[in-house]
Every structure is written in C-alpha cells, then in structure tokens.
Image (cartoon, rainbow, N blue to C red; front, side, top):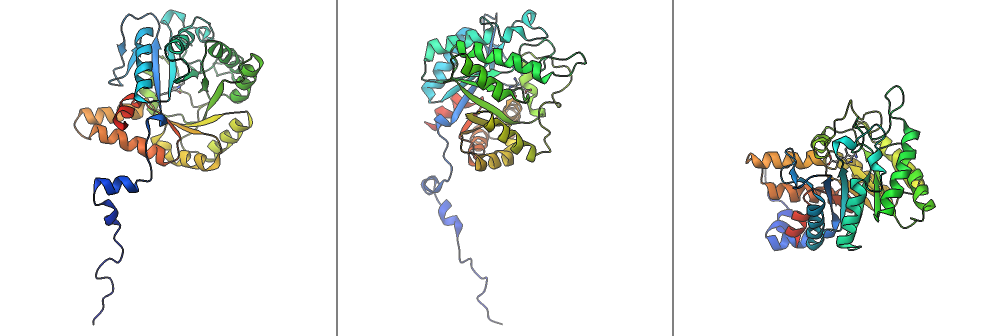
Length: 331
Ligand code: PBG
C-alpha cells in the first residue's frame, strides 16, 4: 500500500505571491493614470457646486470649479475629460434646443476647459439630447411619443458641429440611434472638423446602473430607454453594433456600463484594431461608495480592484468618476 502519489504538490503557484515585490513583478495588468478619463458635470446658472446625493464626492460643477477640476485631473496625469452639460430647467424643451445653442452650457464648458488646459488634456463631450430635452429622452419624439431615429440624427449632426466649433477634441455619441456615427462623421467632415474624433458608445446597455446619472443631470425621464439601448441579455447584438460603428467611421469604441459587461468588453477588445474604452458608470460608483460608507468593504481597494478588472478585460481607456483620485494613488 505504498504510494507517493499526491502527497505533496509538485507545482506551487504560491511562490509567486510571497511578497509585495514579487507580486508587483509578476502582475499582468498595470493601471496607469493615462488610462483614465474623468466624466464631469457642469451646470448652468449656479454660484457654487451642487453635490449629487447619490454619488457622494461628485458634484455638478460651476464653470469655475469645472476649470479647476480639469486642471487637477491634468496634474494627476489623467488623459481626458468627458463633459456633460446641465442647462437651466427653463431652457429644456422637446427638441433639446440648448444642446445646439453655441452659447449652451456644454459649448461654454468646452471653451472654458479648452482655454484652461489647451490640448494637454483630451476634451470630450457627450453628444446626446437627454440632458437638454424636457421629456428626458436621448432624441426627439414623433407624434406617437416614440424616439424618432432619423429626426434625431439631424439634431446630432448639428450638435457635432457646435461642439467641434467650441473646440472639443472627441465627441461621444451616447444616444444609441441607428446611423449616428456616420451622420456625425459626415457633419464633422463637412464643417472642416476632420480632426475631431468620434468615440462611439458601441455597446450601451439599458441599465439600472444609470440611476444616479439622472440626478446628476437633473433628468426627469419619462418611460425608459429600452427601445434604443441594448438588452442586457444580448452579446451578438453588440458585435453587430460594433461592425456598424466601425464601418461608419468610429475612431474608438466604448462599452457601457463596465463591470456587469466585462464579457462584452473582452470580446470587443479581441475583435478590433481601434482603442477600446469602458465607462464605469454612476451606479457602479454609487454601489462601491455606499457599501464603503457602511463599512462593508474597503473603499480604496474596491476602487482599484474594479479599475484593474476593467483594464484586464481589455479596456485601453476607462471613464471613471474616481479618475483624479485613482491617478494620484497610482503616481
Ligand atoms: C446619455 C448618457 C447617460 C450616461 C452617459 N451618457 C445616461 C443614459 O444613457 O441613461 C450615463 C453615465 C452614468 O450613469 O454615469 N446622455
């Protein structure tokens, strides 16, 4: 009854985990400040920043504090900023007119940030109507109340032009209208903005995790976005959206939300030869902050773990409300 089989492990992976130095040496994924992009909200007509209750630590900026936030992000090594405008309530209407007003809050903010940081930080803008419509949808509605795809595309073309005129480097169409990337590319090219890039929200799911964003942009969405954002059940649909966005001229593609869709992110990252971004959205932020505030998880570790996971899954760039803080920690 003598056998040596199985008495001791012949292979010991734990040897490579013995010390912080060893673990650091063999790490397969390294976050870098330049991986990070800071999404930021700027609200028209306020004298001081307004905290967003469901996103502790995130505010609706004044024009002034937005400039400061951009400088802080730049100094921390963050590579870009994604701007969202929050207009005065009285300026919202069915067509989202404030979104195409050259003096609308988003265009003003683009000019402000550009004046402050020039080309040192990549300035990106949300190209979508929901922040500017009184019904809160990402497009204009037809007579039956359904989001009218092609009429919305005309509005997006105008938005692309005014955002580019204001000096943005990258536009981020997030409305999930069919054909949006192509129409925006054409509009940019026809108005002398060939150098403005399109970051396509390629795989954008109809997610419960956008909840806190509604507070962040003061949106009073009627209904939901399920007729234009994707069903969480689907993978193949994302690959189809990807093919379309690339054919229409997307320079970069994005997956959103991040953590619940790492499988989609990994698939897209394998399939493309353009940079891939992932957006760690408001609800992902809120979830970690809320658990940490209760003492249920270690906040800093949880933040870095989620960011590392998103990068490991294949993202080149990560949009995260923790961008500046995480970049500082990585320095
Ligand atoms: C649409 C847009 C949304 C987000 C970014 N762009 C909201 C939505 O699609 O419902 C969500 C970002 C976040 O939740 O952090 N303009």
